[in-house]
Image 1: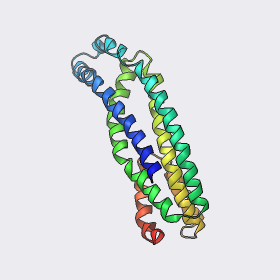
Image 2: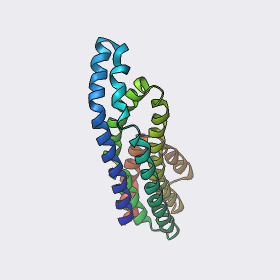
Image 3: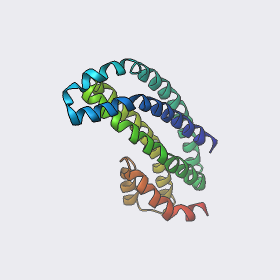
Length: 199
């Protein structure tokens, strides 16, 4: 579980940087909202200078995050594979629960920050938004994929132990690849099978 906690810590450090960047955007967002209501045509000119101070920092932070994330993701996936091979159902259950439910605040904070930033970058970023926003989305999906690997491993373990049918395994695995739905689905799964598998 220590490796899982380290990975969660890395992700929340990334969220901290995102919040700092978001705070830099707050004056731009306020200006955008007020200008949109009064006169949308002047937004780009007012906001342009504010972008110059921090947009160069984003790729640098992203690269550091990616390398750190990849290293600890590989470590955790290898550990998960060993647990699956040894049929450590309880450990897989605990890891899945920890990483899925432990990242709920992460997703909420990221959504609150990414949405207005993305809108502003697309509308007044002079083309920069169409580059950085897909990066935002890709980074978020990288995190979803990792958490889904744990969920799918748990589902596969349930199927291997004949606790769910193959059809249910496929359906739940697909749901684990969809934002928001994956959280709802895994809560149902953990609640339904958690006690019996931890026993």
